[in-house]
Length: 214
Image (cartoon, rainbow, N blue to C red; front, side, top):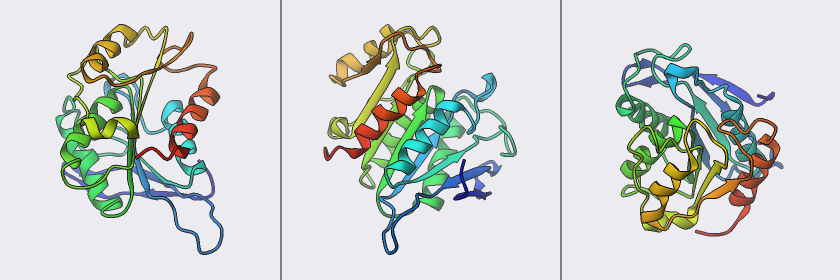
């Protein structure tokens, strides 16, 4: 994504995982705010860590001083293993957190299938450590059993969905969010991939990351 991008190959539960890590450019002596781990869309439908929405999320985190970690799930790109319907992918996510963000401030993010996996990872991690920020884009609530979020995480969470998403209908996301009283930010006219609206999506994420709600 930029000159600060590192290619990494940590070992996951099913073999080597392909990872890109983007670091912010900071003033001398300054430290990043933390590490953000970002999950990509469905592996069987062309989803990779190079997806435009995933890259937009990474840019937003880096702009706000976070180290952004993107990775290919098992069976995607150079990552070893095979698709596992979210179970193994959650283990991949948790392995990335353990190895590349073992301590310090942590943010979790995902797009589409990646949001589903992110909610599962959040459930596992929440009892163990503080999650500073959560970003869920195009949450795949119509296709998978997306986990509910801990009530204490709501103020730290941004959920964004396109009004005209024809992959995951907005009504399905609202049906997931409503019992939790979890707010959903709706992008008027937005589709699943936010074509032509990625700058707006980035600004929404930046605004969320810049807020002081904890």
